[in-house]
Structures are given as structure tokens and as C-alpha cells.
Image (cartoon, rainbow over all chains, first blue to last red; front, side, top):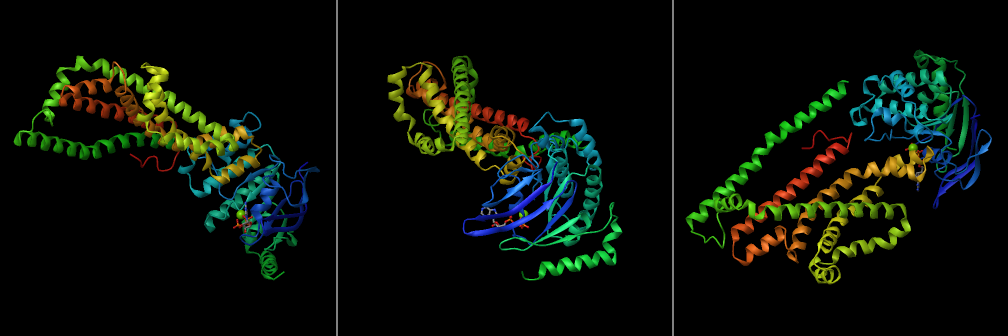
Length: 245
Length: 269
Ligand SMILES: Nc1ncnc2c1ncn2[C@@H]1O[C@H](COP(=O)(O)OP(=O)(O)OP(=O)(O)O)[C@@H](O)[C@H]1O
Ligand SMILES: [Mg+2]
């Protein structure tokens, strides 16, 4: 069971209220995107789900269990890839697994191959391009034992072409595993293309302004982003983001 | 496989670079020596004041058997002192890092320990421990532990926050965060401390020998000084420098072996 339920969560840092009564849920095997402007508190929300901080108010549940302040329940990909420079790519991707059990390196190698990193299994992170590092960081999340994955703007530092390739790649891998995913981004197209549902956050303080259910079938093809319907969704979400709360 | 090939290739490149760039400082040293030799002949500087490089070299070669045992003794003393001193430094750093409250209490003391001039301590140490090897090791430890302890503490503390967040959110225990993240993260900084300690250990050994010993380069120097054998003093200085250099190179070699995958490693020479 890996259903995430965020219920009326608030968090302040000192005087500054960052999150205000945030509520939403991510069902088993669902891909949900959080869309919000920079500085609205998206990473903070992840840090709460990951147990790094405890919420001032509200509750977090994963599979029915209260996870307020509990660490190690989700698998997380930080905003920067955060690979350890002294570890090879292979040793990096098994890190999440290694913390809880003996890592399975064969499985990891196979997964790296799927990610197009076969030639870089024994390379060090500084020998990789930005996109390769993001892929490695995502493989690390997939190999972690937790069934729920949080991705914090994994593609924000990439150029448009790489970004599209990475989105396609992410979907193809995800469709095999179908772990529940909460995906943070500030790119509208990316959110629509990838997710079942898109949650739009307001800022200062952040709260869930509106929720869009995206009806496109899976597997999704690349041409989808050029269809009339897709642009329609994009417009709607854009207006929601721009409108003052 | 391709990556591996370039890695071993780059070691060769580094060697080549050292040879290519190494001739500059060597040339400067040779020029200086020639200048020195020429001026001691030209101005007929008395040998007790400033012996010429050739005289020093001659003395160094001909009386090797007279001072070889001093050299061995100092080398041993420095190595043992270095190992003890840096181990204690590392241990202190780890303990203080894992116990923040203790750290707050002891950090000022750590710094205070460096404000004591060794010369002032010497009489006390000799009263307590006599003229044996113990007070000498104590002095070397005192000068060696500090650079390593401070470097390691800084290294632990400057651990990348996002990596630490990742580790905690992935459910790592405090011990795992330390052994898998903070310790390897601090290694480059620790090595900077080790390099300083390596040269300090030789200095500490020689100073401790001045203060009372029956063998060692420090003793050899004192004897040479009291009989105005300035050439021998220079021989001693030469070997102290050589010893420092060897220690330093050893630490650099160890660093290359221990630290993997740092960006810019290939570029460093
Ligand atoms: N540990 C902290 N202490 C104090 N303030 C913090 C802390 N972490 C985050 N904040 C503040 O919370 C706000 C939201 O930060 P957060 O990193 O969650 O934004 P974000 O939505 O992830 O932005 P971006 O899209 O740029 O990554 C910011 O104003 C930030 O200054
Ligand atoms: Mg963020």
C-alpha cells in the first residue's frame, strides 16, 4: 500500500508562513504533478513528506500510516542530482538500497543499461553530462526499496531537447514499474504530459488552488503535446496559475 | 571500459606534465646555487660564516657514516609522532563532530592548545617524562594533531546540505550519514590537514631533539653549531628539507590513491 494523503498541512519558517492547509492525495500507482511558482514551497513540502521537518499543523499518511516526521518512508530525488562524487555511478544508484539491505548490483547494472548509461557504470559523476546525472539519480530512486517516489524538478536544469527525451524515457520506465509518483515542476507542458492529475499551487503561503484531472490515455506519445486538446489544457492551467487567488 | 582507459591514460599525462613543468624550479635552484658558489669564492666568505655549496656537498658525502644514525632516528621519531598525532587529531574531530555539545565546550580549548609555545612546555615535559622518547612524542603530537583536527571538523561540517537531506529522507541512521557521507566528503580537507601535519612532524621532531636527546638531526645540529661546523648545520638543514619533502610527497601519493572521482582531479598537478 502506497497511497499518500496530505491533510491540512501547514508549515512556517520563523515568521514566514510557507505552506497553508495543503491537502491532496496520490493514489496507488498514480502519477501526480505539483505545479507552482519558484519559491512557493514545493521542496519544503517534499521535506515534510520525507520527514526532514514535521508540519506545524496537519497530518501526513502513507498507506494509512501516519508519517509525520518519519524518515525513510519515501524515495526522493532532490532538485540537484546529489550524486556522491567519490562513488561510481553503480555505487551511487544502489545507495538508497544499501541503507536498508545488501544491494543487488546485477539489477542495478541492468537498470542503468535501460537508462542508457551502460558505458558509464564504473564512471564517476563528474564524467557525466547533466542529463545523465539526472537519469542516474532517478535510477537511484527506482532502486530504493520504498514504493513511493518524490521527484523534485528533476529536469529543470536541462535544455528543451534533453528535457523532452528525458520525459519520454521517464514515462517508459515508469510504465513498467508503476510506483506512485509525486512530481514537482514549474513547467506546465511537462506536468500535463506526464501526469494523471496536476495540482496547481498558489504562493505566499502555498495552498492547493485547483486540481486538474488529465484524461489522456497511456502510453502517451510525443505528438500529444502538439494536439489541440493538449494546448487547451495548457491554456486552462496557465490561466489558473496567473490568476490572483 | 572506455572511461577506464582514459583514467589510466591521464595518470601518464600527469607524469608527463610534472616532467615538463618540473624543469623550471630545478633550473632556478641550480642558478641560485651557482650564484652562491660564485659569490663565496669571489668575496672569500669564511666557511664558518657561510660555506659554499660545494663544501657542504663534500661534507655531506664524506661524513655520511657519522650522521646516518641521527637521520634514521629522526625519521623514525617523526613517523611515529606523525601517526600518533594525526590519529589523535582525527579521533578528536570525529568525537567532537558526533557530539555537538562537547564540541561547543572543547573547541576553544583546542585552539588554546595551539597558543602554547612548545619551548615553554619543554621544561615541564622534561620534569614529568625525563629525556626519553615520551616527551618528544608529546611535542610532535601537540603540533601534529591540530591541523588534522581542524581540517576534519571543517570538512565534516561543510558537508553538502542537499546530500545530507537525501540521506536523512532515505532513512539513513546517524552512523550511516557519517560513514557514507560526511567522512568521505571530508577526505580532501583531511588531506590538506595531513600535508601540514607531515611537515610539522619533522619540525616537531627536530625541536624536541634540541631540547634534550642523545641522537637525531637536532642533536647533530647542536653539536655542529657549538663547534662552528656551519657546513654540517647546512647538511642537517638539507636533510630536514628532504625529509619534509618526502613526507609531503607520500601524503600526496596517498591522497591520489584514496580520493576518487573529484572533478578537476585530472587538471591538478
Ligand atoms: N530550512 C529553511 N529555513 C528557512 N526558510 C526556508 C527553509 N527552507 C525553505 N525556506 C523558505 O521557504 C520558501 C519555499 O522554499 P522552497 O525551497 O520550498 O521553494 P520551491 O517551491 O521548492 O522553489 P523552487 O521552485 O525555486 O525550488 C522560501 O521562501 C524559502 O526561503
Ligand atoms: Mg525547490
